[in-house]
Image (cartoon, rainbow, N blue to C red; front, side):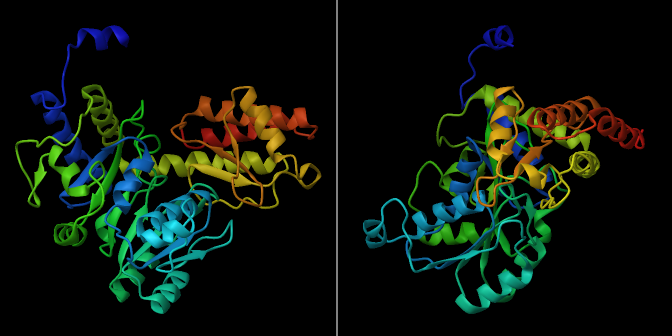
Length: 386
């Protein structure tokens, strides 16, 4: 790989082939999002960069209702409070401001944000903006995107959605949710643009018109300025890129290839693959005695409790697995649970490896797990699709 890079020569961010790659990538990204939004492009960095760009149109004093049901929507809420805070709000608590114009609606860990919850909050507070995560990775919960959209539409609210864990995994088209005016995702999950490249974002005309009227307090993550380098100007696609900041030709190539591969696989097929393999993983986890509360409903992640006799040992088990090179997590919000993902691990060998490693960890902890039977049942299930 290094030899290929070295032989490629130097391609700067304004070189014709790099710009051509960015143009092709933005068109593929619109297909991945399922949108006609012209301001659909990608932001250098991880999902946090895309989300920061999505929150940039929020100005101090704007009224926002934010729905939180896990660690990552909680961090999104933190970013929103920073954006919406006045100078006085920041002075009162610089590291954790709590502006009165931001209402945080907390939903219990393990529960989804429902349309009824969104409707009640928007009807009461009548905000300018509303925020929700589509798939909350911290608790493994899918939130009600249709209910969120419909409530935003009824109350004239501009919706912002964190689609970091759903884009490229669930099959959906964002144009089906017109009251959600802003979407942000990441490169490392459903898109799989590695090494980390670009975070996808999409803004509809309502947000762009607002930005033209009043601007926002950023240069790097300014949606209109960012879009110019992707050959988007004056609300349309144009031929020439305008300099915004330096882009890596290698990152463009990686992101372009990741989008191409996703579309070649098929968005709907990828969603079906995730559902199939997640069901196999979930059954295997339950077969090892973790049967009480599998709380997740995401197709890329299983979140569950250990058997009652091992309650309280979640972090011990996770740390042991990670020390052995098996990357699983405990939940970062209470109550403590185990999280095992299958992100981009959609093959029979990789699922066998994940289940086998977890069975070994359970046995090491003292659980009575019949690893051979668990793997046998798993493979009988996996063979049913062939």
